[in-house]
Length: 97
Image (cartoon, rainbow, N blue to C red; front, side, top):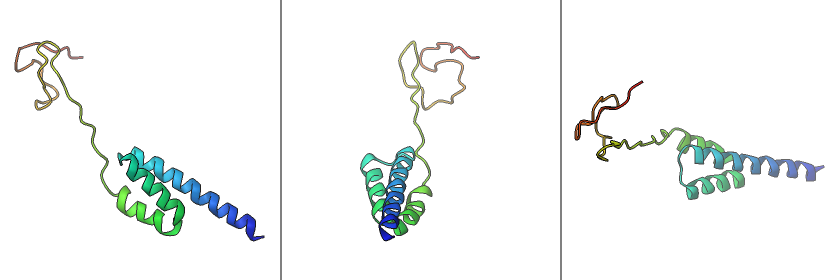
């Protein structure tokens, strides 16, 4: 009777650890941090899962940083507004849709 319950409990803990690992990777956590959270949740599910939601889920996601380069002069345009029409360095007109 208890053998099946133990197996189901271990299976649920393992699945929760895998899901937490995947979620941590999506949220921008490092590989080591995501593995640590996954193992922690799998080993101590009743403490690890709520702690994961408190510590990691409430952190804002890391923003993607996109570098914009002028195709003519090759200078970095990231500091300028996205909607500029001309390169401030060489004057190249950008195609706008």
